[in-house]
Amino acid sequence: MPYPIDRKYTREHEWITSDGTIGITQYAQESLGDIVFVDLPKIGTELTAGKTFGTVESVKAVSDLYAPASGTVTEANGELATSPEKVNKDAHGSWMVKIKLKDPGELNSLLSAADYEKFAGEEAGH
Amino acid sequence: MKHMTRKATRHINQNENLIFEKSSPGKAAWKLPPLDVPEVDTAKLLGKSERKDLGNMPEVSEIEIIRHFTRLSTWNYAIDLGMYPLGSCTMKYNPRVNEFVSRVEGLANGHPYQPAKISQGAMRIMKTLSDCLIEITGMDAITLQPAAGAHGEFTGLLMVRAYHESKGNARKKILIPDSAHGTNPATAATVGYAVENLKSNDRGMVDVAALASQMNEDVAALMVTNPNTLGVFEQEIHKIADLMHAKGGLLYMDGANMNALVGKARPGDFGDDVMHLNLHKTFSTPHGGGGPGSGPVAIKKALEPFLPTPVVVTKSDGTMAFDYNRPQSVGRVRAFYGNFGMFIRALAYIFANGPDGLRQTTEDAVLNANYIRKGLEGTYDLPYSTPSMHEVVFSDKVQSKKGVKTMDLAKRLIDYGFHPYTTAFPLIVPGALMIEPTESEPKEELDLFIEAMKSIAEEVEEDPQFVLDAPHNTRISRLDETLAARKPVLRWKPESTSH
Image (cartoon, rainbow over all chains, first blue to last red; front, side, top):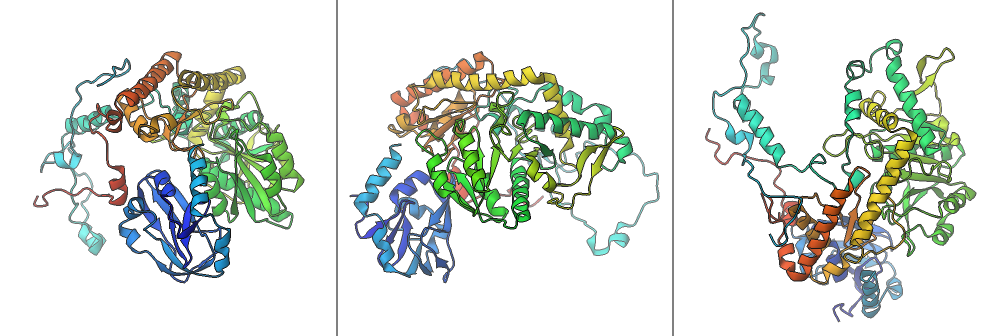
């Protein structure tokens, strides 16, 4: 199983753990290609589930990051500013922001690893 | 080279370094005549602002300058050398008659500060072009001011907002299909609207049911490109327009692909309220490095009060004038009257072709795209089988099984003497190869292109690594685009600063 089962996934290709750590999926980094820039929100920013909170730029395109859940940013991964390639090397190990979840119950409506893998497979197969 | 190509061959061309590196002290390509006016004391006049050190200015002879730029020009690919499968989005053929007319002395030397009395000819060109474009689009009025397509979108949405404001509610959202040009959401956001994404259906068109559920009184307009970026005509555009109008919304048409409709279908007739044209696409004025662009915005009657000022009008005595007295106008969006040189070229193109010629241009653009589609169907995956208009979108699905992606195929195409096609767009097709030959390409050039693309597909089967390493026959082989984006070096500095 390439998608860790310790977290939930969105149809916009982000993952989130129960403690509010957010990143993008292996499928997302593969589709984007070489990532050259990651733009993340400042600490204290309020995220709203489903709304954009930052961008990822690859050699192909600039893509929005969508918040998997609502909450307040407590930490942003500054390392990605100078080493965005870490996301390509290890998408599930390279977190982008950590948030204090407003309502942990929001995670229940997200996809499980198995469901996400199926979803990503269908999208790639188009 | 693995496969021989009929189109291109290697031939000697000259190496050339930077002009700064050719410099040697005291060399010059000029000689000034003796000073025949009193010399001024620059230090006294300019004080601290006087610049003593001119930095690294190249000192070279005349022939070195000529050779420098001529050599560089021979490294280039140009539409005058061969086909650009990027099509009208970047470069299509600019007929020479356009250039001839734009150089007529009275036009080339005209100045926007000339009084209207002696600018009547220039104003008549603007009015005649406006009338032609209104006839071609089936709209009611037009502004020629915007400098290019995205600027046209901006101007169009300013008018949309002014229209809704005049009704008491500017509204909040703009709907945009997922196949749209990236400029559409950027424009909507710039004008202050929230952007809502609209999914395409499995035929690559706007999903009318989804639109019906997303359309409400908060939506100011739908921005739709027709034909869309898949080269597919929105067959339900009438229904789409009715859905928008029923809830008081407007239909904005991005006219970037209007070269597939001219003389055949008029946006004004299928319910469009606002649209921009790209004279530098559809009407063959220069594009890419040349330009400048020009993005007229055509509108229906209801939006006419909001047109940017001034508007060219014909007075009762038959003379032309600029009308500035338009209290509901969104204001001026461009210095003077827009990129006037492009108006001349576009009008020359329209007159040189005439109505039948323009119609044939559209037919040829669609025919050429479909000729390529037929030629490469079966070799490359066709994600949408809906009929193609002026462009065709394939995907790298077959080739990517061997690890070769659209970008790699495009790089190999350079070795065959063609400019690459558009890669990775539209976004709804993973690994897209978007090909637009335009109306100008003869069948012989299209055959060479199809042959090259088929040959590359064979190479992928035989030796994928060879394609992954392409281009092989260029001055410089594969560049590290990722490194260039991550660690850009934006300024050249001399290796030794001792001189």
